[in-house]
Image (cartoon, rainbow, N blue to C red; front, side, top):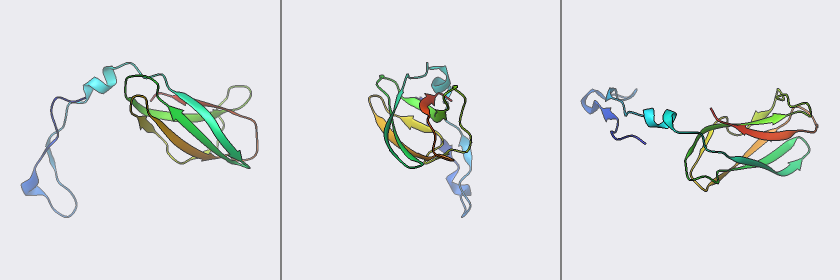
Length: 113
C-alpha cells in the first residue's frame, strides 16, 4: 500500500532497537473502503467457540474486530479471543477461537477498525 519503505538508521542500532529516519506513508490504507467480511460459527464445545472470518472481496481487510452479541444485539462482555484484531488477504480466511464467560446464545459479527 505504500510507495516508500521505512528507512532505518542502521548505524545507530543497539540491543534495544533501531531508530527510524523515515516512516513509510501508509495513508492509502485509511483511504480505502473497508472490505465486507463474513463470520461463521464453525464449532461450539461448552464455552469455547471456533469462528471462521472470510474476506470474499478483492481488497485486503485491515484490523477487523470479531465480536459476539446477545439476543438483543448488545456486545457480550468478558469474551476472550485468540486474536484481538486481524487482517485478511483478498479471498482469504482466518480462524479465531474465543471463550465465553458462560454458556449462552449469541451471534457473531465482524467490525472494521
